[in-house]
Length: 127
Image 1 (cartoon, rainbow, N blue to C red):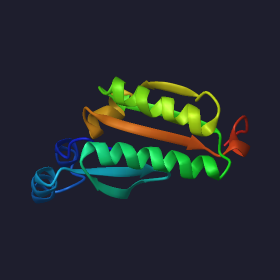
Image 2: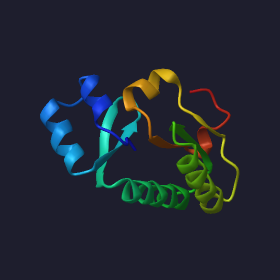
Image 3: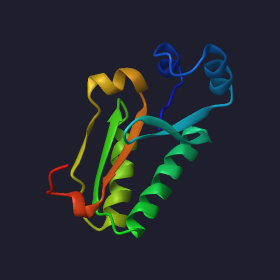
Image 4: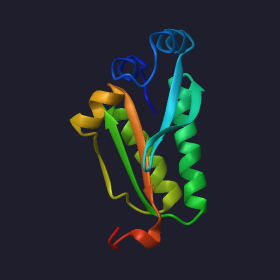
């Protein structure tokens, strides 16, 4: 979940008009990072975006995936809240709870909150 569109605009991922209108509407994009960066969902307001991440955790846990991580960029309280929820739904500790690397943080900006999962069968194997 990206808290501000400004850094996506500065990085050339979205245009100035999108950033302006999205900011006015309080759009919080949820982006997936698999092989490439792709939009996953658009939610209005930070509270709804955090709720959507919590819902995604429930959906992923229902599929049987148990390895999860939470990362953030200058949002430790939100990250701790999401991690507590993940411990409950996944019924295990996550791989880690940490601040995002500077490289990713510079593209997403402060307030970014991320949930990562790995299918259980891949844990411990070579990719």
